[in-house]
Amino acid sequence: MQPLPPEEARRDGAEDAQWSRPECQAWTGTLLLGTCLLYCARVSMPVCTVSMSQDFGWNKKEAGIVLSSFFWGYCLTQVVGGHLGDRIGGEKVIVLSASAWGFITAATPLLAHLSSAHLVFMTFSRILTGLLQGVYFPALTSLLSQKVRESERAFTYSAVGAGSQFGTLVTGAMGSLLLDWYGWPSVFYFSGGLTLLWVCYVYRSHPGLGRLGARPAGVQAHQSSLETAFPKALRLGWVFNVVPWLVAIPASLFSGFLSDHLINQGYRTIAVRKFMQVMGLGLSSVFALCLGHTSSFCKSVVFASASIGLQTFNHSGISVNIQDLAPSCAGFLFGVANTAGALAGHPWPPLLEPHCQLPSSALSLDCPGALGPPAPSAAGVVGVCLGGYLIETTGSWTSMFNLVAAVSSLGLCTFLLFGEAQRVDLSPTHEDL
Image 1: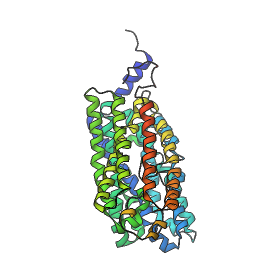
Image 2 (image 1 turned 30 degrees about the vertical axis):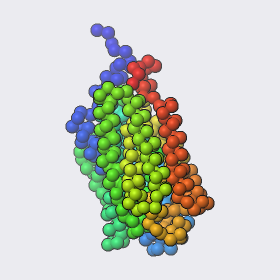
Image 3 (image 1 turned 45 degrees about the vertical axis):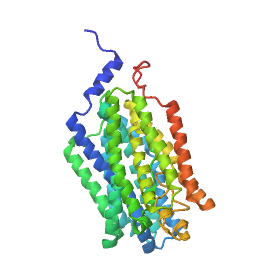
Image 4 (image 1 turned 120 degrees about the vertical axis):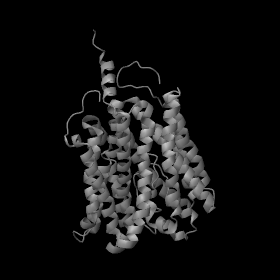
């Protein structure tokens, strides 16, 4: 009996290492909750910034520094997270980083009162949180590319990705209540404590995560920066912080189901990925343009919900396409791509203010991170700063949404022209997907 060629042996080994259907369902639920808690911790600071500014005497510039400092760390560990995920296992990277960021989040109120240098300690804690959370999505991509079958990959990724909308919604709602009832420290205790409980659960359910070692052989960028708008938004228009995210959660799940269904029906993988991007970048931009040209509150909610909901189709497009191309090093490649996305960013603005009949002073950053000049966040330096510049110079939200459509169209055209789904990490000749 002749031995199998090296590339076939690697493929067989990878298939043997994949999760069974029950394991995949259990891990999907676990990672969905983990992504939710990631965003709970990330959004805690924007929710509390106004109260903390009042307690510590921060001005708008200082509060903006605290909010933007998360991004400074976030873009530095994308590639590292993906590489570690490919080498030692994405699940280990995720749990270890969650242990650290959960502890830092829960300890934030204590750090804030260590000395009179509140701004320094809070900026440092946000940078450190960004560094630790930057590894999450590259490690997640590495994990799912190795453990999930191709026919189930899009739905799994979309389901896990829905945790970002759910986490934003949870912290926006619960955080607002905790802020009013018990003060801003309770928001950090809430999100950090839940993260640490999740880590304990994962460790107990999967004891092998504690043993670090090499993995056996074979084995960002279109996100809204609504998190920076929470302080004022939660007080003035909760609808814009609830309804779009409620729409986005089932939309994300539906996009994953639809993508896997089309592939199982025989449609080419690349055709399905490009269709999902047409929905996630193309059609969502149409609704963004509509949002910039209406003064009706009801229409604004509908357009915002449709645009944000359709953006979740990206989970089944470009986000999972990296796993199609090179599952053995998907974490590293996603880290590279997400770093570029974090630096360039997408100038999606906060959705509340232009439709709530606020006074003109609301456009000059009455709350940190809300509007012009907006603090950079995970949406990226270039996109956010350019968006803030347009608002300040034109005084018009129409120009902002035009910019959103232009950036989305550029990305969509690039992917439609050059996107492929042919695996490239095993052999120079493969079946064309």
